[in-house]
View 1 (cartoon, rainbow, N blue to C red):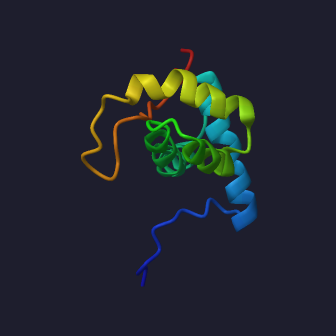
View 2 (view 1 turned 45 degrees about the vertical axis):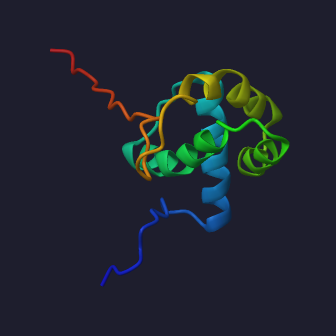
Length: 111
């Protein structure tokens, strides 16, 4: 039975998965858009949205907590400087906010 197995392990060990999500989150914040698989995008959404919510409060504690997840000074600065003001007025109604959106890329076959 599948009880209590919420997390998608993505076929990786814990440390590899943590590094993968941290790097993908930093890339998403810096470049505003990334290409990845649907499974990784869904796992990244659960990883990034609490970070974006924490960035709404610009304090030293919030910056240190976000840095512990991202491990990238430039991404943290970008998050608090440019991304946080855009999402600051959005209320946190549910556990999953609408700060990130997964858009599938459809490739066309040449006929």
